[in-house]
Length: 332
Image 1 (cartoon, rainbow, N blue to C red):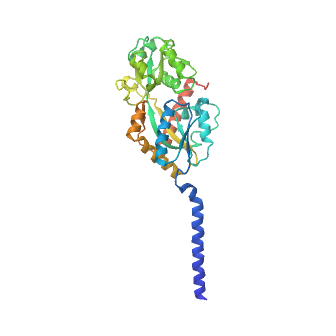
Image 2: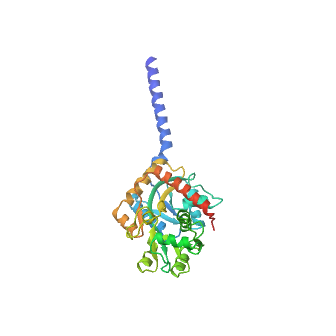
Image 3: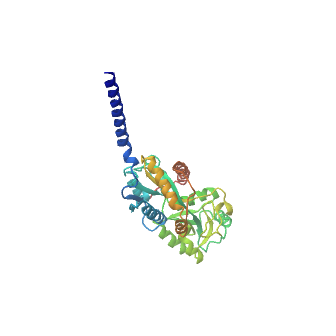
């Protein structure tokens, strides 16, 4: 009888252990399985061809090769990037939908009265991927060759100089508003329906200046069809190392960085977030990737963690909320 009790106790322990093991397997298998096990979708909230799209496709190609799985780039332009943001926010939080976020991700929350997503609530940060320099350019007819000269000119002619942007609430517009506040100048904003039209009118001398991505205007700068005064990033660009930063040119504290970062729907398992972070940062460190991005004026971001990128997003949201409020900017 005593032996039978011991045997029964042993069987109970084995049964309990087996049940626990099966329960653990049931709960952890979906997240612990080899990732990725199927096609991954990378949502891009803008049309093909720009810096956001080029960066995403560069990363996607390398990840697909490393994983042995297809990585599909899904361009969803429209609504000031909100269409793409909403598509990604509504996707399952399983690691199979990623989003390449850019400055609109942190600006739109202040610019639009109602959004179908919240950038901090509905997304999990993975990594800051790359940064890109913007530059203050003027038409050659503007009698200023340095930033200090231009600020003095603008102060002498309040309201008479105008700057072009690709639309109300866009980064070029808000860059101009931040400049107005920090430099203490009054320049007039002229919004256009897209970057192409604004550059065309700037080249034609119909507007005086604009804040544009450096990579998009290098040919015009080299041909002396436009004149660059300063670069908006914290450091000089390898594309045109002779261009000073705003701080070097006399306006300390002014910095607008074009940034690009990868996020996933909120609730994506942390182990998948960590895997994506490791694989994407490893991809961005490859010499051929660095060279490819450099030719488009992009630089891989310094090493950062998902938590650091989350903090960066919060800082950007606060920064642009102040600019939007001060400027009275509204979405078109």
